[in-house]
Length: 290
Image (cartoon, rainbow, N blue to C red; front, side, top):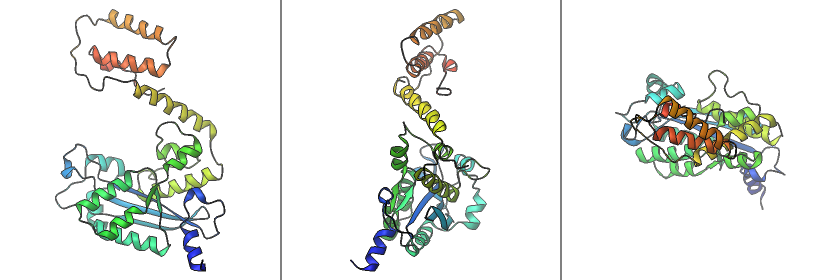
């Protein structure tokens, strides 16, 4: 094996196989923001990429960054949901944004400069929306090949931390001592990519807040049970006359009694289903506090 081949292999070594990694080992974390729709047919059903952020880490520290706004298709509009979540405004995309295909070309050049063949994202959504945006823009093979470099890092967090159910990046950052909720950091593609990397390396170094991990893990586990036991997804039932205040009090006693033998998430799921059925969804207790 030549020295060049050895260098290429070590630079692109997968995260789960880094025990004997060399000093110059580089890892890239990526995140995107997209024009999240408020309803199914909005913007022809596409949630276009509006921002791409990528950070190269070396020895657990950021060494280079890539950030780019992307224009959306002519005739499409930024949704209220997107503006609320990301803070992106139409004038930002019009002034600083470039076509998606050009942004992906620039991203490819950035990755190639660092000889990166695998890019890590927190969850599968980024790659999915990139493929969707590529379809909308008739992207060429180079763009699709760049998207194929993306790999989901979440399973590594889930396995290492023994996570129950689905954790958000904010959850992981709290556990790994990253101040992700600092003013202006969350829901910026570049900051989210960087915080994913910081959280990953803190986790690998054992910088884990076990108390918060247990707290969130327990909550997520209970939420999972609660959701699995909900059967009435939607209900718009007029409250029958029999549902008086006394009826409700008696019903609450039934569920209180059930709580003596059943887990709280199961009892709460049954309770909330019943409240929908009798036309009192306002009395649902929900997931908070589980």
